[in-house]
Amino acid sequence: MSLNDNRDVTPWEVSESLGEGDYVRIASEFGAGLIDSDLRNRLEKLAGGTNPFLNQGVFFAHRDLNLALDDLESGKGFYLYTGRGPSGKMHLGHLLPFMFTRWLQKSFDVNLIIQITDDEKFLFRDLEWKQLSQVTRDNILDILSLGFDARRTHILIDSINGSTLYRRGVEVARHINVTLSKAVFGFQDSDNVGKFFFTSIQSVPAFLVSSLLGRNIRCLIPHAIDQDPHFKVSRDVLPKLGYLKPSSIISKFLPSLKGGGKMSSSDPNSGIFLDDTPQVVRKKIMKYAFSGGRDTAEEQRKYGANPDIDFSFNVYKLIEDDQVKVSKIREEYSSGSMLSGELKSLVAEKISQVLAELREKREIATEKYDEYLFSEDRLIESFR
Ligand code: TRP
Image 1: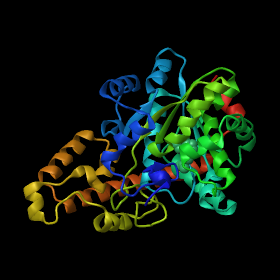
Image 2: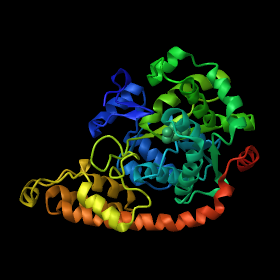
Image 3: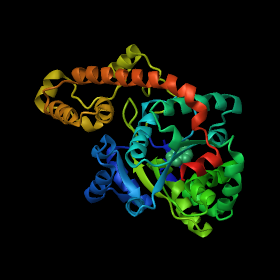
Image 4: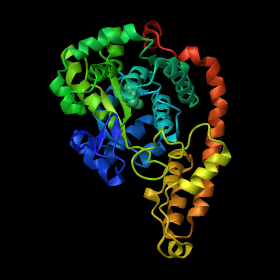
């Protein structure tokens, strides 16, 4: 796939050939820093523990993460902001980053805004409002099944929370011209005008708390690397409005089931969906999951596998709480003492176990749905 201006990554398109080796280059092209061991140690120390997404280098880059940690230490605090464009059923690749956000929320006991950009999908994916409202509710329940703290979590739905977003969105929009939009996002003259405006709406949660409270509180945004262009613009504009630049903690994508790029929701065999039964999970993993193993068992015993490009291993390393076990399996698989079939079978089982737990918690979330929804008063209250 060739993208506008030959980019590998924009918020709306990711090259299928994107590989592990490209991330560091892209982060540096975007101007984001890498999370080095000092910064990671500092984060883990303050969090009082570690997380597979950090250990395994999935959240690998950042902007001003150190400033968010400074604010935490000095007692000023920060809040988290992340989001989801509700386009269809959620698969593991969509959900996994929210696990990391939940860990951050728990570790720091901080407030979290989750923005649901249904307007974005209306503009960029030609989805209609009727479909969008169903998908929105379903996606929110999937996210909530991870067990976010209801008192500290605020779900902001663009099409519903319009008045909060619009009056602040236009404040941002006044500072973004068409030339900048084209340069940052790769838009063409033939793109609809809504696309040009949309980034202003995605900026709002990055200063919403400061705007509502009337004092600056730093925002830390966990997001995948493709969203970086939005927040680059936010960092440029927000100081002009008297707000702090938001900080980011940035992840790689979970590769697609068949390897490369990222999991897509349009192809049912491209990922593991949250409602896949254990039979379907097993079949997808056994049959389609990209393997880092060798062509024959004999060769694998002799040369070993490459776990880093192996879909199953890459999921496993994030959902297995016991990281000692993960290291052991990495070792066995790469040395050739474990074969691809054995790895796949173990991972399929683990995934199904995780999905079953999520389904149970989704039921509970269904009853508590309304408690999580955004209101200006509740947000202000949660900072008291
Ligand atoms: N644009 C994102 C998407 O398509 C959704 C989103 C909105 C988001 N705000 C965010 C993602 C903040 C990460 C962080 O999925």
